Structure formats: C-alpha cells, structure tokens
Image 1 (cartoon, rainbow, N blue to C red):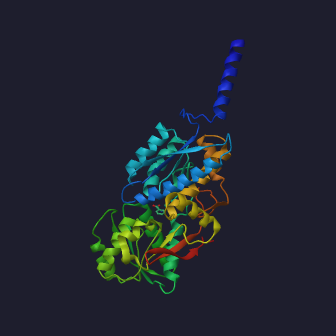
Image 2: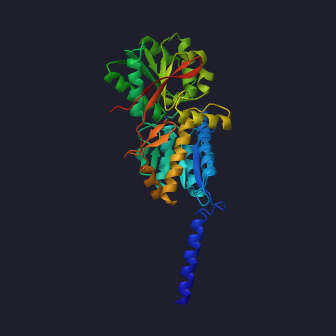
Image 3: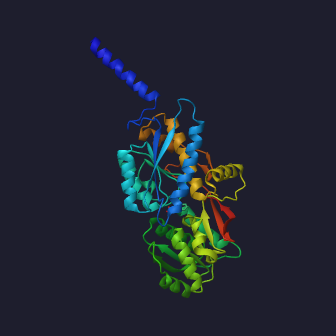
Length: 385
Ligand code: PHE
C-alpha cells in the first residue's frame, strides 16, 4: 500500500511538473507549443505561402513578446508544399505524426487545403486555413476552420459588382477558369449563377489547366462572344499570362477575378494588360481604419513591404488560433476545436470574425481596381442578409 501511494504521488508530481513547464507530448525541450504551417513557399503561387508565413510570424512574435511568465509561448514549423496537393498531404502528415504539432495553419489554395484537411481531421488536429475560400474545405470535419469568407459569397460579390458598377454595368460575361483548381471551378460557377440571377447572361465558358502557356484558343472563342467583362477566377501567374494574351488578341473589355489575383507578382507579369481590371479581396491596404494601418506599419517595419491580403489573413488566423489554445488551457485537439468554434466578434485586420456552425466566418469583401499598377480600393460589399 505505501508503495502504491508513493508511485501515485510521483505520477501526480510528474504530471503537474509537465503541465507547469508546458512540456509537450513530443518531448519539446523548449516547452513552446508547436504550430505547423504548410504553404507554397516556392512554385507558381510562391507569394501566397511567403506572405502568409510573414503574417503568421508577425503574430507569433507579438504574442510571445506579450506572453506573461507561465503563459503559453508558440513556435512555428513551416514546410513548403511547392503548391502541389500531393506534397501538401506529405508535409501535413509530417507535421502531425513526426513533429506532433498542436495545430496546423494552412493552406491558401483550396485544392491544397482539401488535401491537408483530410490528414488533420483523421488525426484530430485542429487546422485553420487563413484563406481557402472553397466551401468544401471546412466540410471535411469538425477540426477544420477558416477565417476568410467563402466562394458562394465571393461569386455574388463579383457578379453584383459587374452588373451594377458604373460605367461597367455588364450585361454579357465570359468565364475562363482553371479546371484543375477546385477554387476556380466553384468560383466560376458561383459567379455565373449570381450573374444570371441578377439579370445578366453568361455568353462563354472556357477552361484551362493551371500552368498552361497558351490561352489563344479559349480567348479567341471568348472574343467572338463579345462579352462586356471576362471573369477569370485563377491564380496570379496564370491570370497575368491570360491578361497579356487577351490584349494581344484584341480583347479590350475589363477582366475580373477573385482573391487568387492577390499578389505583387500579378502586375509584374500582366503589366499594362491589367489596367482597369477588378478583383475581389479580403482587405485593402488603403483601408484607413487604425486597426489596419497599425498592422501595415508593423508589417512594413519587419518585412520592408506592404502586406497583401494573405499576410493579413495569416496574421488573423494565427491570432485566433493562439487565443483559442489559451482559452482551451489544453493541447487536446477537441478542446482547442471547441474554442475555435466559439470565436465570436474577433476584431481582425480583415474584418470582424465570428465562426458560424459550419466553421466559417461571415465577412465583407472589398473590390479593388488596378490603377497605375496599384490595386486601388473601389468599394466594400457586405454579405447578403
Ligand atoms: N481563395 C483562394 C483559394 O481558395 C486562395 C487565395 C486567397 C488566394 C486569398 C489569394 C488571396 O484557393
């Protein structure tokens, strides 16, 4: 009996020491809570991963600097998935099984988040995608969250703007989408659906495969349908190339797209071909609100550039996750997921974030116009009531 008592006491002592030192199940000597980030740090969508990682790191640095003695501290493990879905599955598996991260941030591109979400859900590890807008991502299960709006809304935003904005008032739209990207396929559908509901006509539907170099067949067919606008819900490298070829083929009407255009590289690739074109996004660096401007100042002083929407979303995602882990007072995936689900009225750089029953927030979008090569704020569009 005395023997048992001793070993029980020892157990409790070890357990409480482990708790108070923040000792991890992975045996992390530093005691910091490991957070995984999977991202396209290289490849055709490299700025997506790089900007997001910067935003997450800024949040992490601030958080750790402010952490009270004995409070949680975080450390980030980022892996490059090269913008490939198969690689995303591999690196998320590594984060979850080898690094034993407490939670995962990522991805940007919905096709990659769909791959990573399977791994996180199966292993009971909470995942927060900062920026994947495809509706199916959070349907993967109760461990999967996002802090951005979803594409049924984004499609509505673009259609409404195309139909109602003076002097655009588009009656006829052509759509050119990436048939391999779930984001592009569904955003094209949502745009077309809303455009027609709002009284417009979709006069051409064409597709390409991400990475294609020659879009002349699709663009020639689009030209012959004489649209008032060409909706191209792709990622920036393809969009830049498409814009140049569209102008070379004599298509003069504005192109329009979604958040996938959000990169400093877009106008480097597309140049003057993108002047007067529009896209929807999660934030504008021209938003005068102190919350946004303060973030921009901090980001600029650390990274020497203006943050894009991905940096802002990465920052918001990380802060929401850190706070949820704090509130959970536990590293258990289910406990953290419960706190993520309870996020209400979080004042983010990208707007007020309240997580709904489907683990998505309902947020506003902005429309930007490329003017003199700069994405310039045009208007804000609120969610439909
Ligand atoms: N929404 C895009 C997707 O789901 C990703 C993206 C978000 C790209 C924001 C740029 C900016 O695939």
